[in-house]
Each structure stands twice: as C-alpha cells, then as structure tokens.
Image 1 (tube, rainbow, N blue to C red):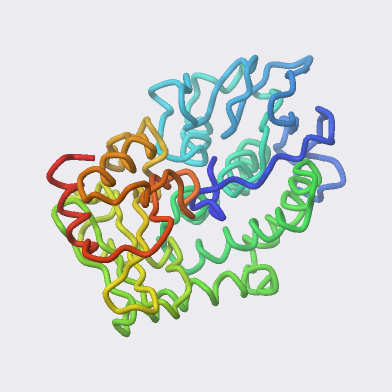
Image 2: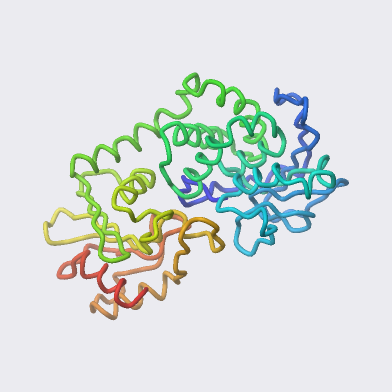
Length: 349
C-alpha cells in the first residue's frame, strides 16, 4: 500500500535482492506457535516463484493464488474487501472459507510500507496480530491515507517507516520490522527513537492548526489549506485531523473531494498553490470511505491555466505523491485560493 512518506509517495523498491522466502518461525524472533505461513519478498516487477499457494498481501504481485490487496485493479474477494490491506488481512483471518487451502501459504509482497508490514504480519502471526487488531488497522490508515486516528497509531506507523528508511533493501527492512513489531505492540514507548522525529513534525502541524497559524476552510466539497510562507508544509495527519473537525474527512458523508493548499510568498498578494485529492483518494475501490472523483493532473492544470489566463503556471504534480494533481510553478497574483477552489467545485474538476 501506499505509504506516507506516503501519505502518498512510496519508498523506492529495492531491486537488488532476489525473490526469497523468510520463514516466520526463523531468526525474526516472531512468536511461531501458530505461524505456518512464510513470507516471500518479490522485488517490484520480478516474477513470482513459489512451490506453495501464495497470497499477495498489499502489493499486487501477478501469479499469486489469492489477492488480499486494495491496489488498483485488484481481484480481492468481495467478502474480504476493505479500504486497507491490513483490514482485508484481518477479514481473511476471521473467515473459515480460505483457512484450509491457505494455512501454509506463502505471503507475498513487492514493496515496503506500513500497510504492507501490518497486513503481512497479520497473516504470519495471526494470534499476536488479532490481539492488536484495532491499533494495526489504524496504523495502516496513517501510512496509506495520512490519517490521524490515534496518537499510538501515528507513532507506530512512523516507527515502521523509520525502519524502512534505514534500509536500501526492502527485504531486509521487512526482516527488521517483523523482528521488532511484536515488541512495539507490547511497549511502543520503548521505541521512541524510531518515531519521535516524525511525531514532533506532525505535532507541529496540530499546533499550527490550533493556533490559527494554518487554517482550513471549506468551499463546498473543496478544502482550502492556507499556510504562511515561514511554516513547514502541513503534515497529512494534521490535515486529516482538521478535516475531521470540519466533518469533511473520508468517513464523513460530506467528505471533501479536493484540497487546495495555498502558501503566501513574500508578497502578500501572491500565492503558491497545489491541488490534490484527500489522502485516501488514490484508492479506486473503497468500502467505507467516500469515493473520490478521479482526475488527470495535466488536464486539470491546462483547464485552470485557461480559466484564469495563467499561461503554463499550473503544472501537473506536486508534493502530495499519489494524491497530487497539479501545482503552480511560480507565485500567482490576481487569482486567490478561493477563486481556484470555487472553480474546481463548480466544474467538478
């Protein structure tokens, strides 16, 4: 799943390692009394080679017998489907339909991120995972959607992301995460060195919102985030908390469809702007959260440039990773964030 750095952008998959099987009962120190499945890391784009039935968990790996993923174009069984791959994995654990066939399956993934770690861990160590289902599910939503369901979930996902950043090889990152995750679930505070930097940055965002330094307002189903030129970019988790307070988060009936981030330049009447989807907007198939209209960032940029006579100021992309749509390349005068938000709302861009 997508992670957060991902909220949005994924860490690059390490392609140096070959497909291999990591037994859950090996040196990873996992409780293995009920672990019959093995983990198989397949570098992104590499062929799957396995002698046992396989479950592709989070990443969409061609050739797996069963898909438990929310990635685009998935064939995850409807009765198991949920918004994150971790939720899907827990639905699998609670279903008797697949138990016998996949009790010794290989659990496959092709990238490293929080949702990937948590969903694979659930299948490898079901007893331990089920004891912490709420936390693991919440942490997956932090990583893939930039949500802020609880302080503990935000910290757990941050710790898992830090482990990923410590390795150039995703397979080694998985080994490291599987070794530490059971201990984190028992005593997360003992791993503050892995989450404190990220937690501090997210907390700065919470404080900026509560102090009014950063503001969020709604223009119909478009949220406008106003950030001063001297403030760090508002963390997705802080943005999500602000949307929750406005009743415009993904689980709300009035979920916003677009976000316009606006930052004043050194000129008081000039703005840099970005347009993006909310954090869960990259997922095409959703069970609980509101579906987000798809859009092409390049086409949106062209439409906004024509509408406001801005030449090629708006360009596709942005800092939002998988949810980015378009951004201004230079500061804009004479067009306000409200103008842009109102146009997007009116024309359903």
